[in-house]
Length: 117
Image (cartoon, rainbow, N blue to C red; front, side):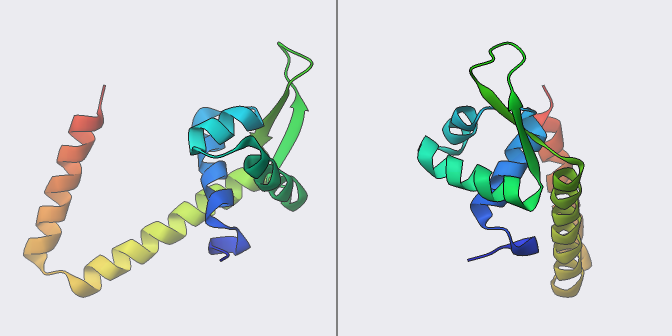
């Protein structure tokens, strides 16, 4: 089932990984996503065809290929994030009381504090 922007959830997840990890091989992406390399190869091919990623030789090992986000892929990734944030903000405003919103804000602050190294 296609997700936002016509991408599958697996394709969107691969873009997130590349945005966070930087250039990676298909094997590294597959391991990070917990899937078989053959499955990741199909995802990478779709992302290549959409213009969201490029594949280049690894500068440290010419036998290996690394995949990285294109500017179009980065724009897609960040556009999806903004759309999800707007959807969540709207839902919170429509469905939560002021007290509930305050609790959520406090919980988010605590999560950020805990997540800091």
